[in-house]
Image (cartoon, rainbow, N blue to C red):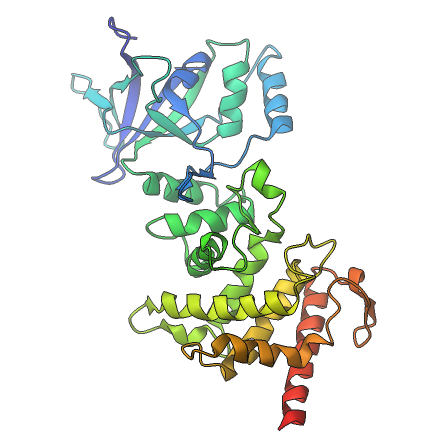
Length: 379
């Protein structure tokens, strides 16, 4: 630490993988990690904007690491990855042998907060559970390997967070909530989930949405989780299916040639359809999946597939779009048993319908057949 105690200096290697973003390899004592870096917990501010990107603390995991760190002879090669501020400075060492063509030796200067209440300069991108254990260990001067890169924006940190955690899978709801917030999704597989995840965000935050406040996301706090009854991953998969399938009602809203999407048109369709579903089944809406299968994954997925058929007969720009949608849904309403009774055609009591591929497929096919048959009878 420098004389004025405002900077921490460490011997480091600079690896220049690209011109814009060097990677620094250095060591910190276990007790210094808490001075330099913080965890960006995922949450939302009062305006609903996503903050951070890290999953909650896993206490059992932290305790296992801590027990090992305090056990005596410790080998701890798996360090941390930090997003460093732009204010870090690297000074190359002098001499003819400071670089081998792959890395350069020098000194890294990391600014420290002037006061205890000031924010820490770096963010932990990978190793949050390890960092918590290291901050609590009695082995405070144990050297910890650190890899750091300069990330000037939160979006860049989130992107690296998703890339780094590809091998050790993140919770699906954390991935789907983070995806709309990064500049570019890390892989084609994740890119396909980016738009539906953004739409789920809209459904959860739009005050006109029947799903407003009902969708459980990774950032949902403990208080709000009590009323959040819909799991976001099921809804993301339902929207993704409609967007990607040529037979999906949302498919035409995407211009595959230009890559543009009519998100306002999609919003209007989704709000029209799901508001009609809510109003047609008021006793089943907003309840936990244990009390209403409509709000569980099996109900959401099956009704979303029915949306592809129903909304093909509705002009969402018409002043009577809501009334038309609700009328179309009445064709199958008396065949549904979301909170009581038995799905006779499926041979299942209402509460034995499960969120499994087999039950989702069976319920989807039944509702589709019932709807088509009802429309044919009314002609």
